[in-house]
Length: 614
Ligand code: M6R
Image (cartoon, rainbow, N blue to C red; front, side, top):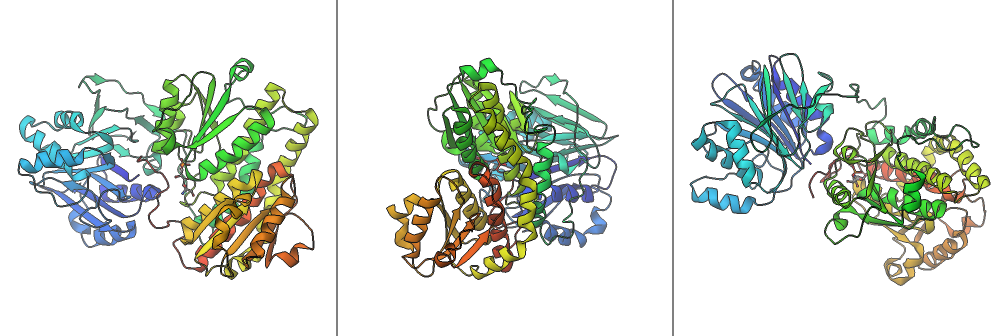
């Protein structure tokens, strides 16, 4: 998490840095800051909270900083130390000549800090980052060469980092380095941009170098030199970025989240174009390099992901097992990486990630790759670190998702899982052609059905308001919609801070039922199909404990009116595809409750869109 930017060139740097940080706000918004080279020293400006506070702070120094053309900036998601001005980056050393910004976590900062304090360094903040500022400054005092000092400091640091560093004795220069955190350098005419992610500079240049782990880049406005960890110069690969600058606009919607929910029908249409031509044609999935032989030799699939992507993975498991008859395990990446996971060349490992940068998933992927598994990545960012590890890359093409709460990327991941499962089933011959045809033709109808739900969103808004003033919320479902219950609850938690939980309905009676009384809303995801009757019974059990009952259903059964206090009806859909329909009202419920409660829907507290720390 956190986002870093840097610029060396001839243009006024402040706007470049702050605009860049605005594009990285998805990585955190606890504080922000910049350091710019002014006439004879480096000046630092910081503010707690969102970037607008930094803009305000800078407005009262507009004159002093207007001529600066070199600088670095940071947007923070707090790990060590509270979100405050003193903990905001850039950080500096005792003499104030060296400044740096950091994304990542320095795992051995306590040991380093003790050593540096013993040498007389005075620490001001509670961050791990400040240790690195003192460390490099200390080494610089001996070697008098910033690049060399960074190399030597890197050898002492454990953990993950991307760093941009400036020193007043080597003006008009930025030194950058990274290990297990993203850093990309944009190449302009007589200027260079540095950032955690491409959107920070894509409107200025499309030529870029992805810095490799342990490499150190020394950048001035007229030159860039990249050295490997042995301090030997290397020739970097310059890539042409596939990105167009995107005008991130809410298009008249009150929040990005609502806009992104409305984009979902078109996203599904775009994903399906060319992949399902008609229900009679085979699925076209050229990106997936799984041959008949590879599939025949697979004995299992592991899907690794976090958060919303993990819920998509759970639906993925259900359909891959159903369609392809291959056993699938799913696991939270953060758990997967700290045990002796069994994977080999007969295991297909699927990593799912909107951002493609989530540190836990990236580490898990690297581990399984080293064991010889085929790595298939499902991501919304084909330019990400995870995509670069992929043997097969399934890009979900949901477009930039600004709202921290994932909506359209989830629906895009699910759609991609359906395509993948159908594709593998066709190769393996595990489904009848009638079944394949039925699912494909129903998939083509999904966008229209979602549009029907969105056309009646006011009814969902009314229902949401009825339950907005609750402290807790329970979602129940069974079978393929159990992940829908988890994802519905996660959406509500994330943006309204209501304590929402998803349960497999059959588990209610094994404990959670004790929590039910007349104050507890229980939302039952009651979709027609194999578990409908069972879930109806579980809903009766909850009703018998006086819970406030809500149904989300495609059933037209009038008897539901007696059991449920509120009913949200959705268009009919086959059970196997129902997660794609059932999720839409749950996204809207979460949205409308948070909006009604006046929460910061797009940037909920304590969260960041891209979680690059383990
Ligand atoms: O970028 P990823 O999909 O790997 O991110 C994983 C989670 O951090 C993410 O899904 C998170 O749970 C979202 N805030 C969900 O809305």
